[in-house]
Image 1: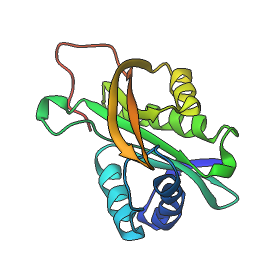
Image 2: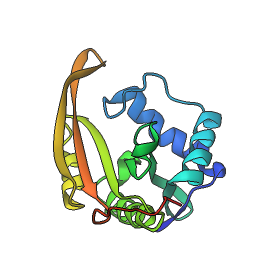
Image 3: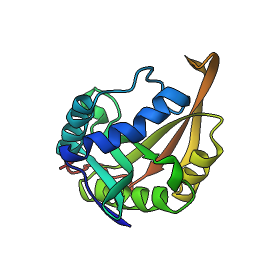
Image 4: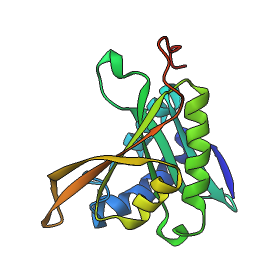
Length: 172
């Protein structure tokens, strides 16, 4: 397996992986799978500010992970939100761990201080992956999303990427 920075050329593969989650699960609250062009825009945006990584096996993209802005206000700029999506056939093969390890290191190198993940519940596999990377559950939004005929809670997980400092350097 190879972990590398994504490019817009990876958009079709990422859109195919993500589209399955959109159409079949409450893991994301999008209701329509985004187009390849939309995913290409998302990749370009994340690469410019945070990072988007893909896992490849034998030249085939098998998963991706990215960081993005946590919230719009300027004081949030040291915080980021992270996500990971895997081809269903690779779940449990270590791809998610490899992607998250590389992504978190990348975010640290760019100067981010705190990472957050929002995970629709129930999702034992994602909860376990985040716990493995020392994310702590810090909140629960109850009945926040309605998808596939049911209401879903969203757990919020947090991980410090760096110790607190009174004068953090700007993220790069």
